Image 1: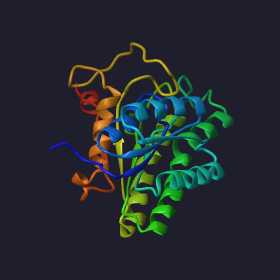
Image 2: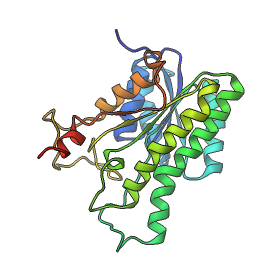
Image 3: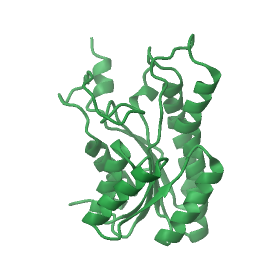
Image 4: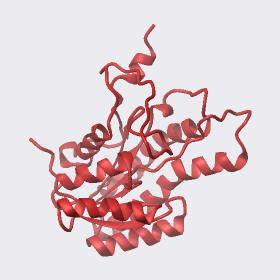
Amino acid sequence: MTVSLEGRRIIVTGAGRNVGEAVAAELVARGARVAVVDLDPATAARTAAALNDRSPGSACAVACDVSDSADVARMVKEVRAALGGVDGLVNSVAITDRGRTVLTIGDDEWDRVLRISLTSVLYTVREVARTMVEDGAKGSIVNIGSTSGYQPRANAIAYPTAKAALLALNKSLALQLGHQGIRVNSVTPNKVGSPVGEAEERDRPRNNLVGRGCEPVDIAKAVAFVMSEDAGFVTGVDLVVDGGALVSMSMD
């Protein structure tokens, strides 16, 4: 059976491209209405327009800097008014410090990567959860992780730190919001679509057990499942969707 999200009202951050865009499209295809949230207003509008072309009235575009708590509060209020409430949230925003090590990263870059890739999750979940509680909604939240949260990287330090911390944050959110009827999970990809912070996909090694690269739609389908009532007994967990990349890293 196809997982249904009929009638659900879901915010997707970073929905202007790559994984976030694929997630928004998949959720709409399964009956949800989505708020396409992106830092770039034009990108958000383009994605929402494409979704509305396929399914009229299914999407609205909202520009937001998710690393700014006041802007997040404004965004959630706007989405709540536009969609009539919020039942779900998918956090798909991150930047990386590719090429940096402990010897080369500066204070500003460290702070920026953690603020956008980690602290923004706290901001969005906090505002959405408050809205759900006020409205008496039983919701589902999914945060997009990374296999970098499980394995150290020689060419980055802030990003893997942020993604490792996200796993711990996810469990705390699930614990604290569970009694409110809000499930919180994460979905973890490996090298999916374009690299973090880049608009275009490029050739790069992808070692896994499936024998192909991960596509944004692979992650989108996993998110749709975790968001749905088919996963109604699932909370506080990380669903790794990496083609066995982490397992292959352990092979001799």
